[in-house]
Length: 329
Image 1 (cartoon, helix red, strand yellow):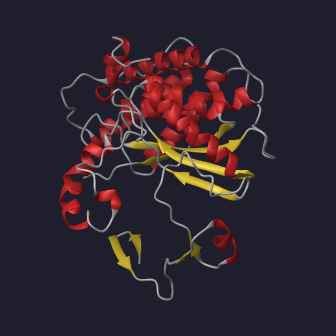
Image 2 (cartoon, one colour):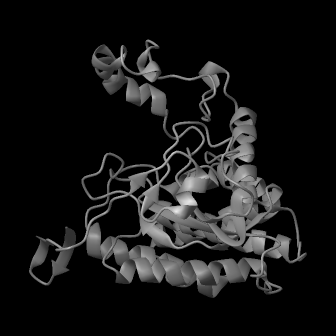
């Protein structure tokens, strides 16, 4: 079935004669010669040796966001009950918990540092680069409320031979979703990545990289608001961070290094703080560098507040946290 939305609301409509199905095969060679086939492997993406070099059109994935979610700890609520029925049939259910030493996640309590996470993700990205065709795409979603995480992802992609060619912004949680409470990140950036040495050369970047980032952020903030979705300071932070690493990797791939990524991110955080401060004070006129684009983003936040948040929650805003240095850089 597919969900169809009309002016009266949403309804579900069946689609006749269509289905998603695949014949399971044992290896990649059989996959290539079999129509409507599927090859499933339950193993770490750090080792894709069963896939030949330059043979895959696209890698679409959703990696862990550093320390945002502890997947094995959440899975244990269900794992312990499933284990009772399945431990005698499947070796994966023999351990007492779902935790695995090799799980790529940041968890300082378990000794899994940022470096541990980054080295694991680097091995995965290296394998993705190897198996992708030269014109292939690596696509995954990402968001994080800390600047260092955005910086790390951008650097890992560059080191693995990728640049980010686009970062469309999408709603990551429904209105009733677990992470949809006030102040949480509501949007994901879809990181569309290409090989540095692909036939699709990274476009040239304007001399004023910061302005180019802000102009792109303005367009996506506008699209988000026009689509009927709210926009707050946290959302603007996500959009600007995504656009920053996109345009930086393009500049780096094209040999247009203006300054280090850490410095660029720090400058963009300062501009986001200015956006949030202007929106919080209701100030319609902004002065200083990038005044026009900063003002546009602030006006989008104010318009969203008038439309969706007539009574604001009494809590410390992102602008206050940015200005007081509580967002880690």
